Image 1 (cartoon, helix red, strand yellow):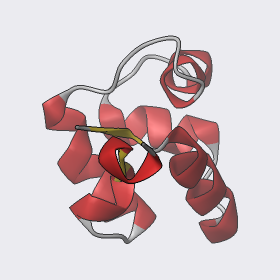
Image 2: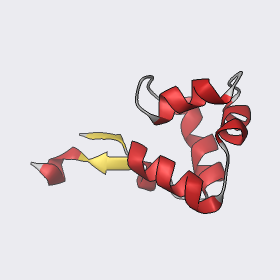
Image 3: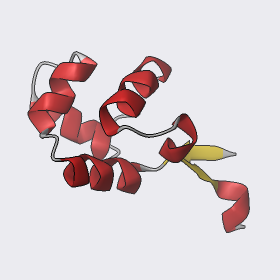
Image 4: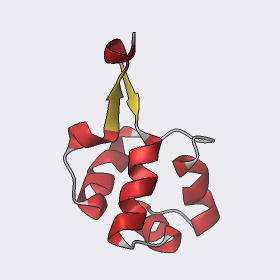
Amino acid sequence: MERINLNFIARRRMEIGITLKEMAAALGFKNASTYLKYEKGEYDFKANHLPVLTRMLKCQLRDLFICLTLLL
């Protein structure tokens, strides 16, 4: 089982210097506060968000996930 690695997404966004507003625009959200709710885990990223995240964060799809079986 896998889940989205929200810490990676937030850390990588800051490393690259992408603002919340830029991420919101790329994902089609109305404002930065909506995006922040996704990054904080209040809302779940959808499958159609993943390709945008990988492009914006310059990472591989697998980087966005935590493998929970490794944590057990």
